[in-house]
Length: 106
Image 1 (cartoon, rainbow, N blue to C red):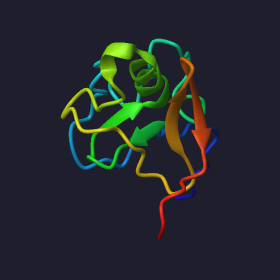
Image 2: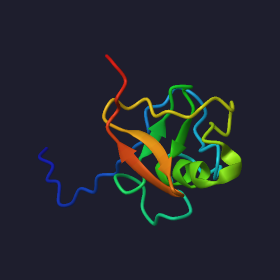
Image 3: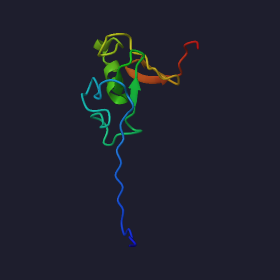
Image 4: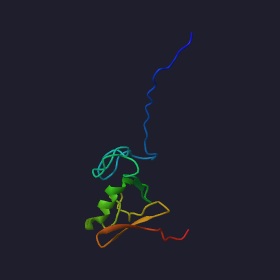
Protein backbone atom coordinates (compact mmCIF):
# COMPACT_ATOMS: atom_id res chain seq x y z
CA UNK A 1 0.00 0.00 0.00
CA UNK A 2 1.37 3.39 -0.99
CA UNK A 3 0.36 6.55 0.92
CA UNK A 4 0.66 10.03 -0.55
CA UNK A 5 0.60 13.05 1.75
CA UNK A 6 -1.24 15.85 0.00
CA UNK A 7 -1.06 18.49 2.72
CA UNK A 8 0.71 18.91 6.02
CA UNK A 9 0.17 21.69 8.58
CA UNK A 10 2.74 22.05 11.34
CA UNK A 11 1.94 23.54 14.72
CA UNK A 12 4.57 24.87 17.13
CA UNK A 13 4.63 26.55 20.51
CA UNK A 14 7.37 28.29 22.46
CA UNK A 15 7.90 29.24 26.08
CA UNK A 16 10.51 31.28 27.91
CA UNK A 17 13.04 29.04 29.64
CA UNK A 18 12.63 30.33 33.20
CA UNK A 19 12.81 28.27 36.37
CA UNK A 20 10.20 30.02 38.51
CA UNK A 21 6.77 31.57 38.12
CA UNK A 22 5.50 31.87 34.56
CA UNK A 23 3.85 35.30 34.89
CA UNK A 24 5.32 38.80 34.98
CA UNK A 25 5.30 40.12 38.55
CA UNK A 26 4.13 43.55 37.39
CA UNK A 27 1.46 43.05 34.71
CA UNK A 28 0.59 39.47 35.80
CA UNK A 29 0.48 38.36 32.14
CA UNK A 30 2.22 35.09 31.23
CA UNK A 31 5.75 35.48 29.89
CA UNK A 32 4.77 33.85 26.62
CA UNK A 33 2.15 36.55 26.06
CA UNK A 34 2.99 40.26 26.00
CA UNK A 35 2.99 43.22 28.28
CA UNK A 36 0.21 45.78 27.88
CA UNK A 37 2.33 47.87 25.47
CA UNK A 38 3.09 45.14 22.92
CA UNK A 39 0.94 43.35 20.36
CA UNK A 40 3.12 40.28 19.74
CA UNK A 41 5.47 38.33 22.04
CA UNK A 42 9.12 37.81 21.18
CA UNK A 43 11.90 40.22 20.28
CA UNK A 44 9.83 43.37 20.81
CA UNK A 45 8.87 42.27 24.32
CA UNK A 46 11.88 40.42 25.78
CA UNK A 47 12.23 39.37 29.38
CA UNK A 48 14.74 40.83 31.79
CA UNK A 49 16.10 38.66 34.56
CA UNK A 50 17.38 40.51 37.60
CA UNK A 51 20.30 39.53 39.79
CA UNK A 52 17.63 38.66 42.37
CA UNK A 53 16.31 36.01 39.90
CA UNK A 54 12.95 37.76 39.38
CA UNK A 55 11.89 38.16 35.75
CA UNK A 56 9.71 40.79 34.11
CA UNK A 57 8.68 41.91 30.65
CA UNK A 58 11.19 44.58 29.61
CA UNK A 59 8.54 47.30 29.23
CA UNK A 60 6.99 46.46 32.60
CA UNK A 61 10.23 46.70 34.59
CA UNK A 62 11.32 49.85 32.73
CA UNK A 63 7.99 51.53 33.57
CA UNK A 64 8.31 50.37 37.17
CA UNK A 65 11.87 51.69 37.56
CA UNK A 66 10.88 55.09 36.11
CA UNK A 67 8.44 55.64 38.98
CA UNK A 68 9.93 57.62 41.83
CA UNK A 69 8.20 55.41 44.39
CA UNK A 70 10.01 52.30 43.07
CA UNK A 71 13.35 53.61 44.35
CA UNK A 72 14.88 51.50 41.54
CA UNK A 73 14.14 48.32 43.51
CA UNK A 74 12.69 45.00 42.41
CA UNK A 75 8.89 45.03 42.93
CA UNK A 76 9.01 41.45 44.25
CA UNK A 77 11.84 41.47 46.81
CA UNK A 78 12.70 45.20 47.10
CA UNK A 79 16.41 44.62 46.44
CA UNK A 80 18.06 47.14 44.09
CA UNK A 81 17.15 45.91 40.60
CA UNK A 82 20.12 45.13 38.38
CA UNK A 83 19.83 43.18 35.17
CA UNK A 84 21.63 39.84 35.13
CA UNK A 85 22.61 40.51 31.51
CA UNK A 86 26.32 41.00 30.95
CA UNK A 87 25.72 43.40 28.05
CA UNK A 88 23.54 46.07 29.64
CA UNK A 89 22.21 47.21 32.97
CA UNK A 90 19.13 49.44 33.34
CA UNK A 91 19.81 52.88 34.75
CA UNK A 92 17.30 55.67 35.38
CA UNK A 93 18.50 59.18 34.52
CA UNK A 94 16.28 62.26 34.54
CA UNK A 95 13.08 60.18 34.41
CA UNK A 96 14.28 58.36 31.27
CA UNK A 97 15.47 54.80 31.37
CA UNK A 98 18.57 54.11 29.32
CA UNK A 99 20.72 51.02 28.86
CA UNK A 100 24.37 51.40 29.62
CA UNK A 101 27.18 48.85 29.33
CA UNK A 102 27.75 46.97 32.56
CA UNK A 103 30.75 48.56 34.26
CA UNK A 104 31.18 45.95 36.99
CA UNK A 105 34.53 44.14 37.05
CA UNK A 106 34.51 40.53 35.86
